[in-house]
Length: 73
Figure 1 (spheres, rainbow, N blue to C red):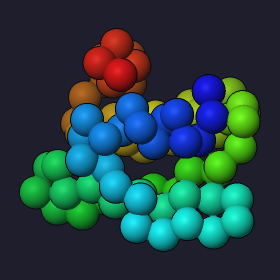
Figure 2 (figure 1 turned 90 degrees about the vertical axis):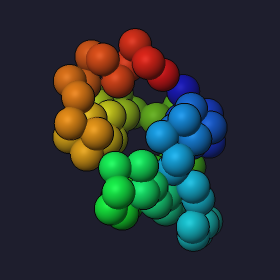
Figure 3 (figure 1 turned 30 degrees about the horizontal axis):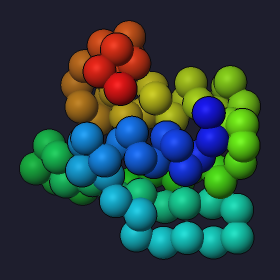
Figure 4 (figure 1 turned 135 degrees about the horizontal axis):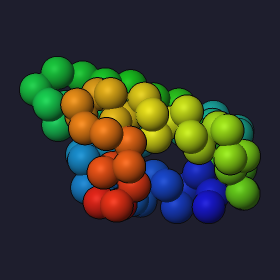
């Protein structure tokens, strides 16, 4: 999965690209009533550990288990 593919999936939780550099995407969401910012590498494919950390961070923000987030995406 690439960083851009993940970005499209995260639209479900109102994550939007607010800044883009040569190799990274900065996303922001206000889904839970307050802002959450994440940086996603614009690589293809994303490394497994990097993807795991991104999903873990988002699951903590949404207050759901990471496994549930994966199923919903």
